Image 1 (cartoon, rainbow, N blue to C red):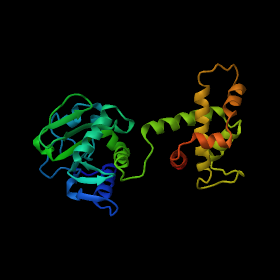
Image 2: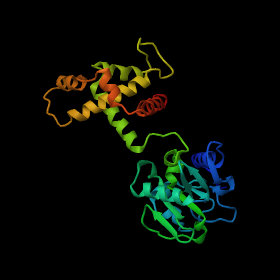
Image 3: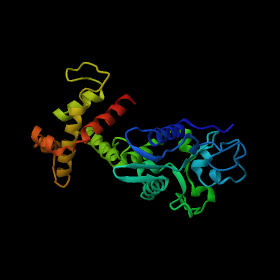
Image 4: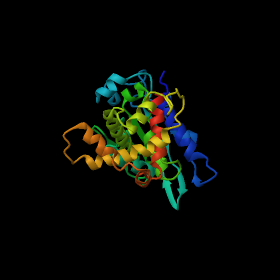
Length: 292
């Protein structure tokens, strides 16, 4: 029978945790558990709320995308979110503002939206709108005046990909969650990773990076945690700044590049270059990659 997959249950739990009960904020109308659904009721047939046992002939949630055809399982691939009204930082946030924010992120093709097929929503409680990544549909039924529907490509659900990053960013944007790394920051980190790999450990920065990648501390002893990662985050930021500055210059040999990167990596310049929140974000991201 159709089941709720773990990755959508995780999104449900995230939203209920932060939009349901929080003694540090003032809420006019909390999001209730009954307002966040994944699996359609027993009579529901067809669509992303249904798994393979409930889809119908030519079901749009299967036939319109190869991602859905290859990803079809017993798992539902949709999430409904009901109404709420919360206040933070002198502003009121509602289901409409959540919907508008998520649609905006989808429209700009943010990296953490690319598993979303569609969002059906209303901004005024009257007119139902639909954002469709495939550009095939633009309307929805009247039930979406009071809840927002998110469909996810079935292959992403089948693969178990984490669907929380987009919603974590929304919660961060309204002050209900500590800032996470944005997709752009993840891309930045990937660039740093590539640059450090090229440097290949032939300089102090590269050596620190390789020690951590191999799970060794400054003495060469194995470590299970990441005690050096905070200082590495500082060095990564300064290194990326130096690499950016060098990108337009023409060097004829690799030693010149290394020398140029290392020039100016003084403690004072490193401290001045790094944003206050970046060191922890980089450290946490590298820690996640090291244990993956």
